[in-house]
Image (cartoon, rainbow, N blue to C red; front, side):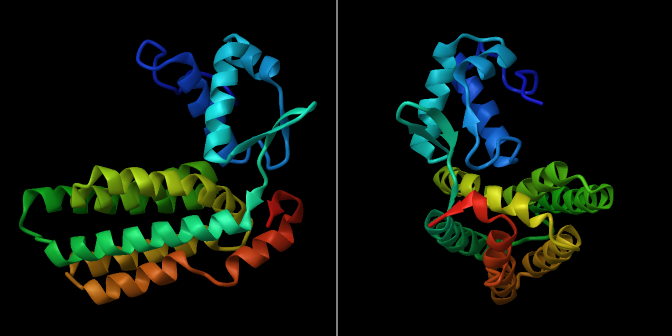
Length: 234
């Protein structure tokens, strides 16, 4: 449900940025579907703001490639670009594999900072398992994001974390579509457990091998496109 309740207070963010965050979330979680037309006035009414901040939010989403403006028609949720998906996946995979290999290399089980990260990762895997049993896709992906963030943050590179986060916007729309595949969530949980074991065992090579398998599934995208052809473009 589109609302401002779960977003930071407008006192700390402009209304446009608040609206941007919420509309972006609706697009990524597919509540606003690829190709769907969006009305400034309707969204403004739901969020309880004027059209000006909604227009500001739309412009930010256009710059991010999640929304497009059609002459004489208005704003439309951008179709998922196969090319952009491949580009973003390459960037995320390259950066995250390098980062998590470094974490595996430096992992110190007796270090308090690493102990805390280990505890967080274990808890997140358990929460993912619970979300999978409930069939809660949104909750599951939230815990998925946090699991990866636990290890990325150990690198202490804000630029890395920011870039990887930006890449995920386009990738996650495909991920939500993937939830329609049987046993998808259970498989992801199993992969996370294996990645966790490799990192905490200081096994750099295994970490890279598992992450490449985790990120790149050659047959995955064509299957999703076949299931939802109207959502995609070249």
